[in-house]
Image (cartoon, rainbow, N blue to C red; front, side, top):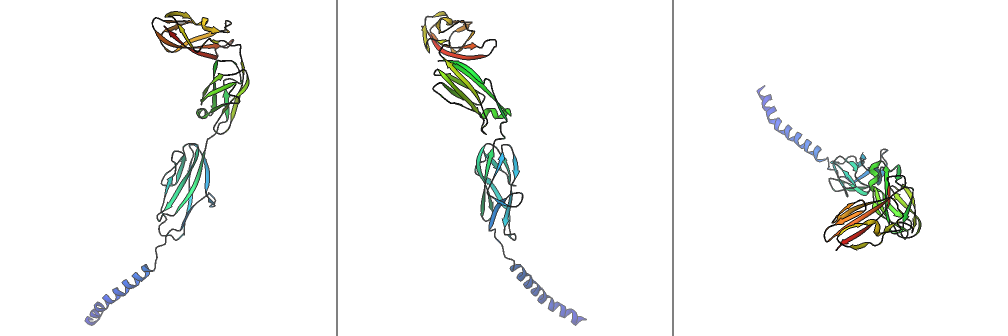
Length: 286
């Protein structure tokens, strides 16, 4: 019995050496496998290089890391322009504004793939203008407004005139100022960022009331603004002071010292409280 125990004690270290050697050989035969490719796929597993989403929409990106036996398949994501489309660490993208940018996926050994994201407007379903037709007086101006549906799209409306020699337009979003430059007829267009448009036909004539000059010098005191209009035929007119010195009441502008007043008048449309044409002049009190 004693001999048997001694024999076991002698052989035990040899057995341990053999086990360690075999284990080391087994683990040594398992090689580290690098990632050789990464790419994006759609829901059906087909390789893609672009996709489209809408503003405020979120989507989770699908991707493949190969080969399947790669040792470390961890990846990171980044956006080339997060203002257009952002991405988090899990590959969830969010459309932030209309435009195009790339989302890049990278493996731990810097193998990359790109996915082009087109972010679109959720879209306007309708644009309503304050006027579909409008009469303008040569030398005057008017304000036209628009409302898109959904209303959040109104801010992106752009304005265009088909003939700026007759009517020029200046504005962005809800309202625009029309300037009546020549006699004739033209069309004003309000267009959403996804291409939907509405139009207003504008006819300009030379019979309208307006200030005699853009800048008018008058003596200190009170003046009746009606006296400084041309083509005035008792239209309903509303005067307002938009800047400078003095006070205004009705059509009477008063300034008791040297100063400058900027005055605008509006022509009120018949049978309504709507103001259409307007003109503006600077009065210098000396």
